[in-house]
Amino acid sequence: MLIKHKHSWHETENSVTDESAYLSRRTIIGGLAAAGVAATAPMALAQKNRVLAPLAARPTAYQSSESLTPEAAITQYNNYYEFGTGKGDPFENAWRLQPKPWTIQVDGLVDKPGTYSLEDLVDFNALEDRIYRLRCVEAWSMVVPWIGVPLASVLKKIQPQSGAKYVRFETLADTKQMPGLRWPVLDWPYVEGLRMDEAMNDLALLAVGLYGKEIPNQNGAPVRLVVPWKYGFKSIKSIVRISLTDREPRTSWNVSAPREYGFYSNVNPEVDHPRWSQKRERRIGEFGRRETLKFNGYGEMVADMYAGMDLSAKY
Image 1 (cartoon, rainbow, N blue to C red):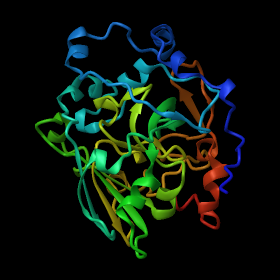
Image 2: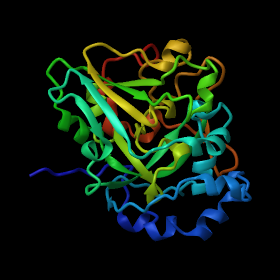
Image 3: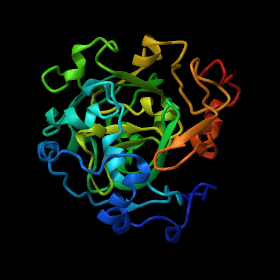
């Protein structure tokens, strides 16, 4: 019998925000002022956004007693350079994205390669509700109620071969839908990767929703990766390709700025970004800064994967 041990960052069901609370319009609007997000978003933009269907998900042990970041802040303050480099650009421009229908190409060292619909890969009858902290390299953070399935469950469906050591992910690159692709900010398409043991860790999540609904375009619709112990740019959005390989994949930010963005990109306050410190972070919706937690506070479940590694060199 499999017994899941309770970790120090797990909370009881009574100590977390329930679904009715986090879907409360009053809760969301009440947090806008603290989050510094304008409550008067243009109605025209709201009308352009697709209607987000509710998603049924079972509660899990992966919760947090910390206050959730207001939904409006999560959906209006984003990094998604395919829609622009400003934090508000994705909210204004991502209405162009057409997330349905959606297919994902699977290739490389797998026994079941092919082009899959999202519904073929993600079991929408087994979605999980998980609250994860998201820490960005620019020293801001959020607490987000994600909905998705463990990445491991998807990898098991495509049956990795014994020689597979890494998982490579690729984002959609369509100039008709993504105006940011017109500028060579990065070498498009956006690419990220994980080592196989990282990908199989139970914390790694393929998310299809947040705040009880389908994931909005600007947050990576219809499916994105969430790797909560790593900096946010590792959580690649709008995935269209998953490849298994025996070589460490060349990832977008590591290729663009190797001194600033390593392959592993674990949250580590002991390793400064070349242009700023990572020791403290600004939680969206709070005043002041708080101490950054190593591995974003998830060390009990991930630190063993890096035993013996020099994390100042393998950053």
